[in-house]
Image 1 (spheres, rainbow, N blue to C red):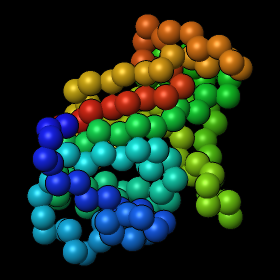
Image 2: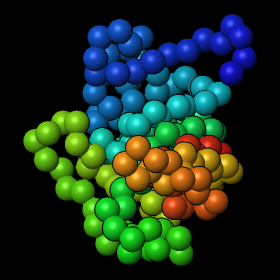
Image 3: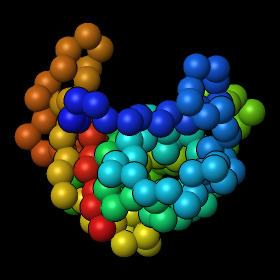
Image 4: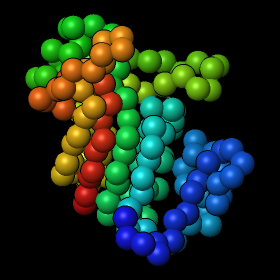
Length: 152
């Protein structure tokens, strides 16, 4: 990020530039603006109306950077992710607002982004986490956390 950039933050909690519930998409006050980047830091997993939010994001930027968790729960799901198949397990919305309602593999994320003319240009991962140990993942599809850059 360049020095002197103007940063607009959106969050449901106090302290953000704009307080807003992203379940409603982006706030009307910024829908007509253009941004160099939209950074979604562990947001997409918590949004039930993901299509609405991604549609709005696609109107204000050509580049998305997202930090998100892949949910595997089993060796079977890791193998599915390796071959870009959809996961066997997926989350369902619950009353716990902090719970993930969307599970992502690279395959599933590509499908969502493609609907809005984004393509993934870079993927990084932290590796595979087992307890207190992190093993380097040579293939991002096997990592627990993804950092994804997508462009139109």
